[in-house]
Structures are given as structure tokens and as C-alpha cells.
Image (spheres, rainbow, N blue to C red):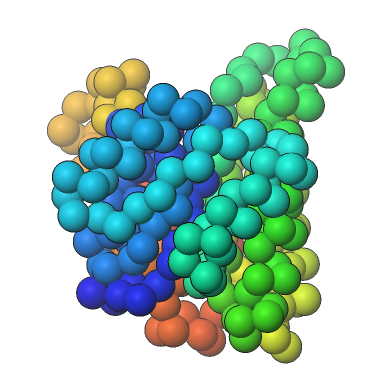
Amino acid sequence: MRLEGKVAVITGVSHPGQMGFALAGFFAEEGATLVIASRSAERVAARVAELQTRGARVKGVAVDLTSEQGAQRLVEEAVAWQGRIDVLVNLAGGLTKYGPPHEYSLQDWEKELNNNLRTAFLCTRAVWPVMLAQGGGKIINFSRAYSIQNAGAQTLAYNCAKAGVDALTRTFAQAGKAVGIYVNAIAPGLIATQSNLDELHPSPEELRARWVSPREIAEVAIFLATSASDGVTGAIIPVQGRGI
């Protein structure tokens, strides 16, 4: 029960086969009280119900985190419910736009940056005064998936958004180090979520050689959420298993 007594806000908890929901489940197993967020009221309600059947203490908030009002409402509802926020996990976003970089539309570019970088900024900024007033907290961002070394020619906007997340992580870490707010990021490998397995159909050999499990990602996130990681801030931690 490494997160007993902790209140954790996790964004991007929409589909049962994705990392956000898996991470929420692992946090609940460790005793965390959860506030989960998604744009869809129907989906977030379904995820709340599923987590509650597993014994989780959880509240769902349906909100658009690309807006200032949405990020602020998420934080306000969490504080109104539990009185504090110990951990923020910025998982909203993901990779949705593919194609040659010179063919990206402005809409493609803005949507990918908004979903990945803008949400992380707005949620971090909204939670900052709460953590400052309570004497500290932990913020966990998600850097580029698959490989932090491989830029990927078909994923321009996503790459740029995640480079921005890395800069945001290090900058807020500098701002938070004197006040007990720790800010780090996880750079995951190819995660064996149900949605990825259904889409990519890896062989057992490929899973062993290249993929990383949700549990392995969660173990690092749990470490970053506890006092065990008080010597770590501003880090971008690759969790890629053998797929380096």
C-alpha cells in the first residue's frame, strides 16, 4: 500500500485498454484515492464504475483539459472532494496524427500539441497553487512513447509536443525544487496495452524483445509518486524494457 493516504489525479482515463486506466488500477491497488478525467462523461463514468468494483475510492470528472476552465475545474473538484492533491499524472493526449511532415495541416499540428503539451501545462499550472499551499506534491508527465532516441518521420506534431513536455518537466522541476514539488516524466517503450495488442498483433517473440508491460510503467510511476523518489526531480526516465 505504497500510496495509502495519497490523493492522485490522473488524466487521460478514457478507454479500458489504454495506459491511463491501467495506471489508475495500479494506483488504486496501492491505496491511492483517485480522481480520473476524460472528455467523455460516458467513458469516465464507466471507468469509475469499473474501478469501484475493484474496491477503488474514485471520482470521475468529464472535462476538456485543453481549456483553462477545464483544467481549473478538475483541480477544484478534486480539492472539494478530498481537500488536497498529492500526485498529478498528466496522461491526456497520445499519438493520433501520422504523415509526411510537410503535409501536416495547421489543424493537425495544433490538435496534437494541444492534446499533449497544452493539457500538461494547464493541469500543472492549475495544481501548482494547491501543492504549494500544502507543502509539496508530485507531478508525473509522459514523454515520447516508443523511443526517446527515434524521432519518427511520420509523427512530427507528436514529437514536437513531447519535446515540449520534456522542457515543461525540467522547467517546472526547477521552479518546484525549493518548495517540495517534484516534477518528472516517463518515456515509455511500446506498451502492451490491450489497444496496442489489438492493433499491432505482436508475436510472443516480439513482446519479449521489444515491448514493455503496463505494470513496468506503473512501477516507475508509483516510485515517482512516493517519498522514495524525493532525490529525483527534472528527470526524463526511459522505461522501455528490452526494446531500447
